[in-house]
Length: 145
Image (cartoon, rainbow, N blue to C red; front, side, top):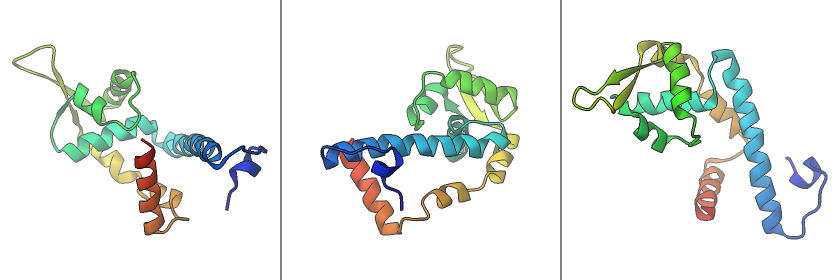
């Protein structure tokens, strides 16, 4: 089992500071793992998130709706969608009644890509936690926010 104090060779004045540093350190560790995992698929974790949002919606969504549902609400969501569109993983659908509104839909190719990406990544990441521990962790993170 890891120990943040050993991992970053540091001591902490109190448990709350240690917990905060541990959250930040772990978030960066997860991000690095995700970046490496998604690289062979030619997408980023944020693009994967967009594809999952669209697949789960089962209908085209407005760009703003997608942005609001994203885990990482980066301001570059439109650019991320441009790249997915260029790869034919999503498509833009103009609104016939308001040309300022654009809907985004996942393509068959996008759905196929999601099917090829294993859900095992998330399972492997959380393999050291029991279901009860995962629930407790989630509840604690909710409490922090």
